[in-house]
Image (cartoon, rainbow, N blue to C red; front, top):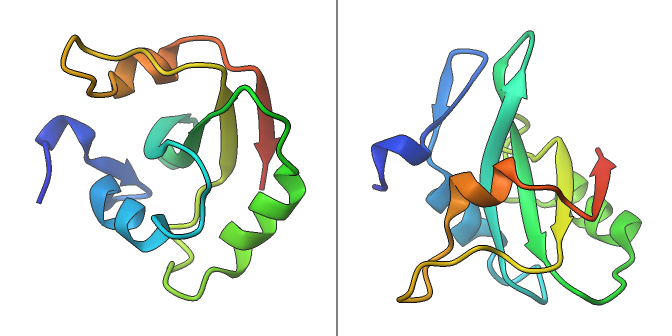
Length: 110
């Protein structure tokens, strides 16, 4: 389904970020990806990383995630992280792990 190093293990449940991204692909107006951050109880928590240098109504995007009919409770991101620009490879692919380790501009906890 996807790369093994992208698998999210949250509370013992393994999730494929690419499957969650497909469910969300029509809901977001800019580049994004689903990843994870360390969580002291669950092991990892699902987050949505958003690339934007514009002001978005994060509360509105948060409501989309909270009420999205295709996402299960465990697939719903627990936070939205906004970055000015994603780090990319020379071929244009997003360096997911490097982005998540870098400093974000805004964070909205859901």
